[in-house]
Image (cartoon, rainbow, N blue to C red; front, top):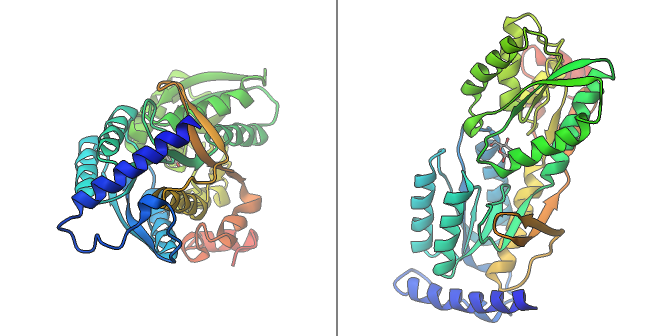
Length: 366
Ligand code: BGC
């Protein structure tokens, strides 16, 4: 009850401020969003999305951007999407620009919780609603959190690695994602919850990779590999990019394909590695579903309505439960790479190039 009331107040405030801000703008006249009663086919309001970077995963520009564009266009809402290129200060500047430009809802994939929370505080002060897209901003004030169940992502990675290793004794190295990304914490926790109880496994190294940087990942894994005297039987790599870094080191040591490596994002490279047997599995998180969920939540906010949620997520730092839409990730091995293609997550044309054509044919992908 209390939350509803404060949302409504913020909503009205947002409407008033939007009108002021858009006073000299093109077409501020038609909106009656403050009532929450508009049932037109196109949505009054404007959604801004800030993606984090182009390096930590190819997903942001190759999957999220096009799917977000499609989702907003289908919903008939005005939108703008920009990329912060891994620079938290730049994300702040983009956010200020979007707010000045009259966005009514701002969605961010934060680069770290502190800078994300600052952006959300500023947005709220200007009456702009915010959504955490994919990564929860700890201590933030987002109205909604749209993501996958990231603990389950980690569990699928742990289970995938265990399936590839079997129950014989094995030395495992963890290459975790960025320490500033709350998802990375959840992925690692999920994987540990599956692998730690398997008593034949020994963790011989574990390190987080700053900013998910694939080049640093090579150096970090080389060090962990050397420290373990090369006795590494399996690697829990948090996404396909980090997995690719690990595979390159294993290749140099003549071990690619013999040491199972996990991943995430079902990228073209990740799927090719899975088909080739150098990567044990990846995790598919449909960008179409996630972008669609973001568009739905944003439109509800624009209309002064509440979005349909799947539950809440605890923000331990802010001490609040954030209304959430969490989707189900899917584990992908050689046996079901085809499912990603059938779902439109990647195209056969992109995955089945050159040497992968024969492997695709074997996997029933045409
Ligand atoms: C996302 C992953 C992505 C990683 C690096 C995480 O927050 O959930 O899908 O691979 O960031 O960009």
